[in-house]
Length: 434
Ligand SMILES: [Zn+2]
Image (cartoon, rainbow, N blue to C red):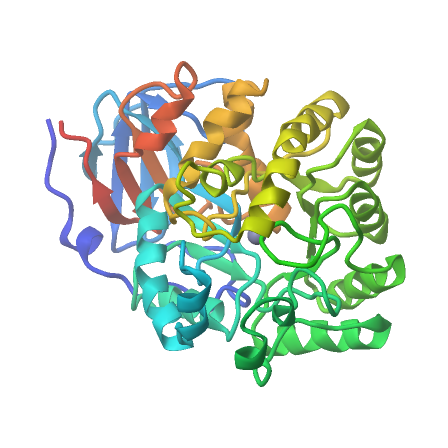
């Protein structure tokens, strides 16, 4: 039995304030209903339970009940499994996917912003109701975040980093690539030395950054830099963290090489992104410092897919082949040493929405399905500092919910087929077919 949704549920609600400033959710009484499902994975508990009725009031979860309420409309999800909206801690929603270098050179900021509208929509419809977007250019990320928050376009709640901080000649220096002359006049994330790093952190925050991203090592998809080598000195990393923390922001550090991982962790970054060459020694440093690890294991598969569909340059493909073997070893080292892991994917290198494929790799590499789900729910919320807002299904959190038809604890790929999505109490997708 399924009753019709209240009109207010399907109307586009003007939601919240800008991501950087918004407070914990406030319940609004006029839009009150319950979502019933046979099973619930709440993002925090060790096992699933059910049946449940999740009472939603306005944009917020009011309560989770085990008996049917009699005084409100029930949205019936039948035998489905309900989960918290998923969180990807490493996206690039302003990135256009798979452009050959010459076309990338000619692609304008306006074009990137328009592409970002469908990227945000695809990400939300895949089940991701929150994204930490770790690096974009020309403030497209800020524009997308604010347009979503204003209810103008559909997409996840976003924290954004604006420009990634890079040393001259580092992973984020566009002067490394063919578009040097074209990009010479544009703002960039290049900052050298402690003073420039501090100033760039201040500038990014002035322009709307919720989080600071530093490129602590070289990268894979950039010519002339080496992922094994450090991209900043320890003092520069320390300056970035000090300045960001002083201004109430966390730092996410892109770090492939072991030295970069250890320096960044000791400098006090919140998370290590990629961590490709993390061994037991480096993992122990993360464990000791309480640093999060954001693995991004899926991205290497589309990069190295037959026929080079992402149009990656030969030099960068060679780097990707070298890194591939190490990434899963790093994941094993993190598991062995009890490092905190949060879900992240590098979506934007590959099509937005496909990051659901990251879950299967975590499980096939030895993580329990419930632990894999927590990386993208309660653990991710804790990493980004939003644990009071998102990441669990419990009273006081945003009504960000997804449902799958089967049991993701038996088959983790159920999460590749999210059938139903609600964000802030508003239904955005219903393909349960009941
Ligand atoms: Zn990235």
